[in-house]
Image (cartoon, rainbow, N blue to C red; front, side, top):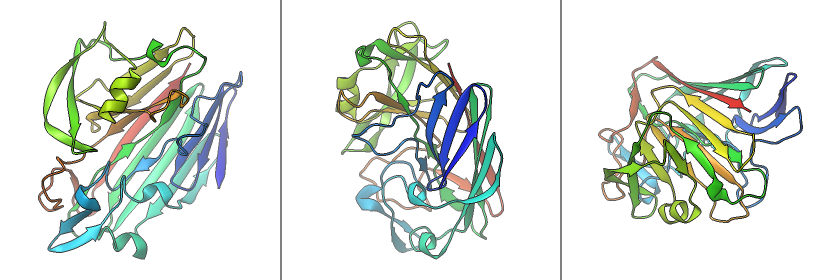
Length: 287
C-alpha cells in the first residue's frame, strides 16, 4: 500500500512493501526519485545483507542457509505503526519464512518524516532474540538526473576531500579487500558511466557523512546526509545512458572477497547483542 506525506514544498510516497520510498515531488512538479524503465526499484532497503554472498549461501553454527542478493527486506510487507500527514512509522518482524533463511529474531522499524524540503528516514534494527545477531544494513535510493545534459556533467561533492579510499570489485560483485586512493576534482566525483559500468559499483570508504548530488547545468540538487555508523558509500547506475539516475547508497558493511566461504560466526559484519538496537539515520534535502 502507498502512503503519502505532504507539505507545502514536497510530496512523498512510501510503499509498505519493502518500506520503500517511491517518489518525492517538489511543489513545482519535479520528480527526484527514479520512475523509469530499466530498473524497477526506487530506493530499496537492504537487510540482513548488502550485496551478494558467495554461491548465494552462508554457514551459521554448522548449518547452511540460502540468502539472495541484498536479503529479503525489499519484498517484505511492513505493518503500519503510526501515520500522519507528515510522518509514517512502519515495522517488520522476523517470521517463519525469514527464520528459514536467517535464523535470528529481529524487528526492523522505518520512520519517515518530512519538514520543509527535507526527508528524514530512520531505520532501527533490533535483535529480538537470545543470541548475537550478525547482519548488514544499507539504503539504495535512486535519484533522477534531470534534463538532457550528459550524465558526466553531474557530480557528487565530498566537501573538504581531495581523494577518497576506494575498494574495487573482483569475481563479479565481490570486494577486493585491498583499497586504493581515488583522486577527486576539487572535492567532486564527476559521474563517469564507463567507469561505473566497468566497476559495476563504485565503493568508497570513510567518506564525509554528507554528500551533494548536483550539476547538469541546472539549479536542482540533492544533499544526502547519514549517520556515522554507515562508513561505506556505494555509487551505482544501471548500464544504459537512457537510465538517467544515480544511486547513492550508504552501507554499514560490504560483500566479502568472493573467495572465502561465508561463515556468519566469523565474517566481518555488524552484530547486535540480545535486545540491543542500532539506528541508521538518513536525511535528504531536495533543492
